[in-house]
Amino acid sequence: MTESKTFRQLANEASPLVIPGAHDALTARIIEQTGFDAFMIGGFQIVGARYGVPDIGLLGLGEISAGVRDILAVTDLPCLVDVDTGYGDVKNVVYTLNHYEKIGAQAIFIEDQLAPKRCGHMAGKRIVPVEEMEAKLRACAGERLNPDTFIIARTDAIATDGLDEALRRGERYMKAGADALFIEAPTSIEDMRRICEELPVPQLANMIEGGVTPLLAPAALGELGYSIASYGITTLMLTARTIRDTLADIKSGEFKLANTGLTFPEYLDIVEMPRWSAIEDRYES
Image (tube, rainbow, N blue to C red):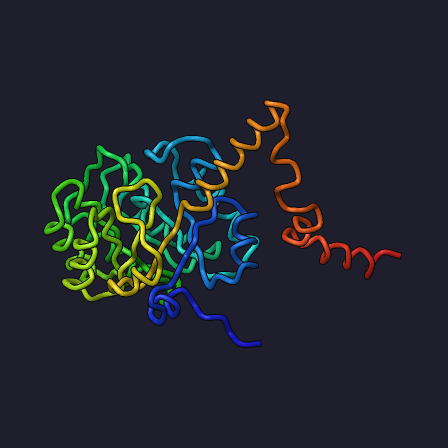
């Protein structure tokens, strides 16, 4: 067997590395079976799918990491995990980083919002002084358990102070120890191009349906200079739409959607029923 590549290797080689988001373990299984090289787990997805609340800082490390642990348990794919603000000061950030490393995350991104944070495409964000974020990044770079753990610094400064400040922060965050940048919520392709041209380091593009950033295909993002293309909420949005439409169909009594989903055998294949049946056959007398 050939050794799988790490998230760091994939991010440095792909143009770009495409990472869909998983909001639960079933989605992670399907991502792996579809043939993706890596994926991501965002706080927006976890708090919405697992707890039914918006991404505005209502939940902490314990609640969110419970969902992340369940997802990471079913796949060995390299995964990028959203650690929000790190849930406190430098010691909390290091604890959070190490906790996620121990349960299998190969990459994390941390943001410079003031807690309680909120989704990067919502209004009302506030950011911390640049020095506070630099200290967190130095702590992460210096205290990671695995030297290959990939640290991405996210700044939400565009929404609060404009693109120039976001670029200034991005440069300082790289010097503080980040391996890549996530400059959140640019509002035009021109701004996206400027980010990649003025900061020619690994950059993550966050593609959000209904967000403020133009929604582009991976090839277009690669042409702009992005190294990582995240489609973090796409599966969640489509899943939620399907659930709502299906329930409305059942309630109406029309059953138009009956037998339009996966077949029972297809679903059992996804959750690896053939493997468990084989174990039964092999060991039970």
